Amino acid sequence: MAKDPDRRKAEPVEGPYDETMSWGSDVPAAMLRQLGIPYIALTPGASYRGFHDSLVNHLGNERPEMLLCLHEEHAVAIAHGYAKATGRAIAVALHSNVGLMHGTMAIFNAFADRAPMMILGATGPMDATERRPWIDWLHTTQDQASLVRNFLKWDDQPASTAATVEAMLRGWKMTMSAPQAPVYINLDASDQEAPLEAPIALPDPARFAPPPAAVPDSASVVRAADILAKAKNPVILFGRGARTEEAMALRLALSERLGAAMLSDLKAGAMVPTDHPNHAGPPFNKLSPTARAVLERADAILSLGWIDLGGALKQAFGDSPVEARIIHASLDSHLHSGWNQEHFGLPPIDVEMLCDADAACLAILNALPEGAAKTAEIPPVPAPKEGSGEALTNRDVARALKAAVGDTPVTFAGLARSWPVDLWPHRHPLDYLGKDGGGGIGSGPGLTIGAALALRDSGRIVVGSLGDGDTLMSVNALWTAAKYQIPALFLIANNRSYFNDELHQENVAIRRGRNPANAWVGQRLDNPAPDIAALARAQGVGGIGPVSTEEELAAALAEAVAEVRAGRPFLVDVHIDPRQGRETAVKRNTRGAA
Image 1 (tube, helix red, strand yellow):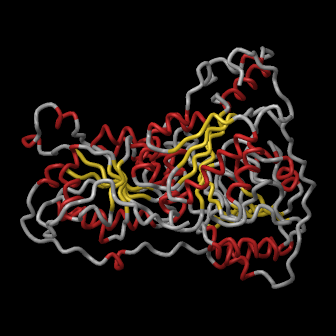
Image 2 (image 1 turned 60 degrees about the vertical axis):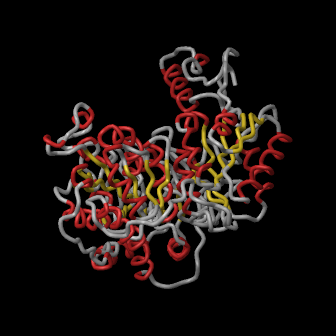
């Protein structure tokens, strides 16, 4: 995808710039450039007005360039999407306590997804004698980071401008070290706006670089390799890992060396090729019948960065003892605090490696005897259900998108429920970036924009296959994509419902012997159905929809892909029936039916 030569910043900065570091806020701004951070996503706020001035009039809005957002949650989600695509942090600025409150959900998502980012907060003057009446008192908090500390890796509120340098060095080192997660540095408004009393030298970040990922101890590697070499039916669970072709090749080599079945979790993204003969069916949110069958007969299970190992074993074995020997490699326990239960159920583990999952993969592979590639015995995968043809499904959307993009590689920044990975397998680590981490709604647009920003010159088309509920919560995030001409395709699987919750209500009613046909009540986004394409156009993003036939779909996607290839964002709103192709369907009340 060629870069648009006419792309300019929305507000070009007129020179001359004040290149002298003479104000307190010049220091954190200069440190962002020193750390090589290319972007800072923000929604303006008076608590960091000094810092904002430094970004513009000291740095010229370059390295980092500001990405203006209409809501703080979008700013954090964009940084999260960038990190998912690159493994690297960009910066976010959040206005005092109120802006931080807006960004909270997105920070939790990034923490749960182990995404790095440097969040710069701000507070009114901690010196009460310097506060303006009313507003500075409202926007000054004694311990602002306490609002989000339970889902941060680290935070600081430097008490002077000079201390800001070390805080940002440490913050960068912390967020970029495994396990990665957001850090928060809170800047005092008084320090920002005070003149520097003496010059401050900026250190070389190379001397404060993040350390290499932890490797497993040799004894654990020997034990793990011995268990796996002797196993007749080994299984490897591939969770979080580096999004590189080299790392994917090593994972695949380990599976082939052992003849091990591979399982993939949609929460983690593309870690191994999902159409490889050793891969047991499509990736999943919860165990598929094929995955369960593979685990039930396994005599050795290797978990490499798997998310919720205890839950996967519970789904496969219930309360029965797990006879298979279990090996688990992860650094996640370093971030478990107990505030939230994202440590998940406690699994039985025979060999535990407190190390980077990819480092464990390489060490085990090197410890195994060499031999020809082996093929795992995979149970038959049931054929997916096709729709009746009466309404569009995500299978129709996938086929039409394939026809529109041709041979151009696609990165899915998000996948709507029931997206057919069997039709569009993951073969490259950037084919699919995984879920949002925290299971909230409203992150999809921002994540897609962040990923598209990161990959804008990669030759890949970035697609967010998003639900209508997710999109409607954050549709004004699209304005940032329009403003900065970030080429992303927003593909809305619009079932006019909070459909996931319809299924929950349906299950509750059935369990209680009540009428499941009422599951739609209080869930449907219909009568009237929001015009998502019109909402996109209102943000300056091209939009088509609602699309409800195969002919309309083909034409809409052809236009959308052409726009994205030209460097512009675009949205297509597709009305789908999520019950098409399901094993069972509850007869729905026609009022509000989709």
